[in-house]
Every structure is written in C-alpha cells, then in structure tokens.
Length: 412
Image (tube, rainbow, N blue to C red):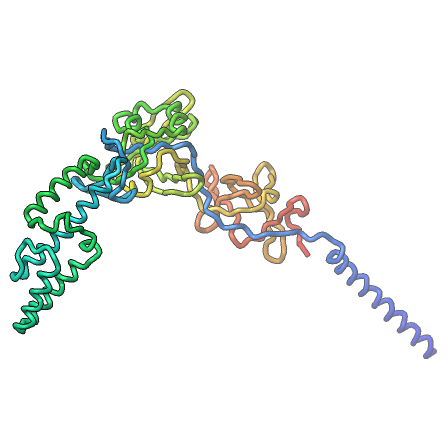
C-alpha cells in the first residue's frame, strides 16, 4: 500500500513537471525561434524646404583701364577696401629701366650723405671724399670735441656703406647738393614715362578679377534679365582692357532663376537665401524680394541686400536656394510608414510592449528617411475639423516593419 502511494506521488510530480516544461517551452520558443519586432527611435531633425535655382549676383562695379602698356603691380590686396584717392596699382612698362634706377639710387645715397654732412656744421655741402672727413676727425680729437668726433664717424660710415662705396669718382662726387636734387628730379621724370600709378576715384572693394559682365549686369539692366543670360554668364569672359574694378559696398542684388511653378512669393517680404559656390556653402542671409520677372517657363526672383558684400564680392553665379518652410521634424525609416484606413501613420511599441498606431503628417522624404511633423508642443496634430490627434514623439519606439505586427498586440 505504501509502495502504491509512493508511485502515485511520483506520477503526480512527473505530471506537474511536464506541465511546467510545456509552459516554459511555450514562453521560450517564441524567444528562440520567433521573430521579434525590430524598432528604432525617431531622429530629431529640422526639415527645410528650398526652391533651388541659379543665382546671378549684380553689383555696382566701376572699371579702371589705362592705355599704358605694361605689367600690373597691385598696391592693395584683392578684396581690400579703399577710399577715394588711394593708390590701387602701378603699371610698369616692359622696357628695361635698370640703368635709370641705378643712377637714381646712387643720387639718393649721395643726397642723404650730403644732407647728413651739412647738419654737422664743420663740413661744407661739397665734401666729396673720405680724406676730408678723416682730417676733420683728427682735428676734433686734438681739440677734445668727442661729440663732434662721433658725428663725423657716422658720416664716414655712411660713406663706406655699400651704396656709397659703389660710386666712382667720375659720377657725382664733385656735385653739390642742389645739383644732385635737380638730377634726381630729372631721373624721376624719366622713370615716370615708364610707369603709371592708378588711383581710386570711388570708394569700395578692389578686385583685379574682371569677368567681362560688369557692364551687362548693372543696376540699370536688372529688368532685362532673362534665362539666356544665365547660360551666357557660365562662359566666363576675360576683358584684358581693364586693370581692376572697384565694387560699391552699400548695396547689391541677386537674381535667382527658378521654374515657373505655383509657389507664391510676396514683393517686399524678406526671405532666407542660401548661397552655395561650387557645392560649398558661401552665405546664408535674409533679404527682401524687390522684383519678379517672368521669362517663358521660368521666373527670376530679384532680391536686394545692403550687407555681406565682402563675403561674395568675387562671386558672379552661384547655386541659390529660397527657403519656403522650416519645421521641427522627426525622421523614421521609409519602411515604417503605412496607411491604416486611408490614414498615414506608424506602429509604435507603447508601454508594456503594446502595439499602437500613431498618425503622422509627412513633410517630405529624403533618400531612405521620411520626415514627419512633431505637431505642437504637446505632441498633437490638429486636423481639418479641429480635432487634436496624438502623433509620434521623440521617445516612441517605431516598428520598422508594420506588416509584422497588429494593433493591440503585446510584444514579447
């Protein structure tokens, strides 16, 4: 009897262990062999919509030229601002003027020496050799005039300098100071025939890059802009007749060629413009729209600025984007978006791993990412009838493949 009870208890224990094993397998098998719903957190982003087009920059540019044939030597740097009357460049002839310059250098050294000697009081203006200075030094030493000795030694050192030492006795050693000054003036006049100094008649920014469109793209020709001109500007012209130009820094315009779509613009309203030069961002600014020109299937939007000319003074044609909208957005994989009862949305894994549907307002798609609105500050969308609908938030876990789950499902 006792043996039978023991066998019965063992059977019950085996039975209970079997039930527990089955339950454990039911719970474990989905984890081992089942497919879990993959999730991803939304990506916080600012979604911007631009209307892009080609932009041409129109500046007030004053051209400078000369009939003097020679090599150009800039006095100011490219992009530097100048005032009226500033020296901007010098044009020097290709003729060899070495002899004249050497003579001028010799005379300048002699004049400097004689002017210095005359200030000593003990040597006349026509001193021309070292012996006289040495004699004077000896006399001052005997007289005990140390101060005068030092001054005479400085004059002697000047005479020994490389510039003076190269002067032969037959050059200007016997000339007096006035004669040397007259000769210097003659040499300067001769040299001036081989060079032209160019000064600014306007204030502004100097550029030595002349592209040949300065006259075509003037303030007076803004209303003549058309699509064909944008193509012409791409083929840069070089006008070698002009030495440099000075760009007025008070105002400038940009005309942006865009497709003639249904986008509405308002004259006088300021728009944010993004300018890119060779795919690199050059400048972002906010400026008013002042003109709109219609050209066949295109529109040319003309904006005016009174700032930032120093950043774009050397640009002519740039990629230009007009900002149409900017929204706080969340980015999710394209695969996560689907329609439920004709409404676009996503599945999220809510608290306690429950699958819930969230309606979204799609702003745009870029590559493999869909950008949706974040709604108001509370994370709600307001639909047409004024109803407020909860939408996706930054901390929601979005299910990548909505076809793998259903609403209300409790995920393991």
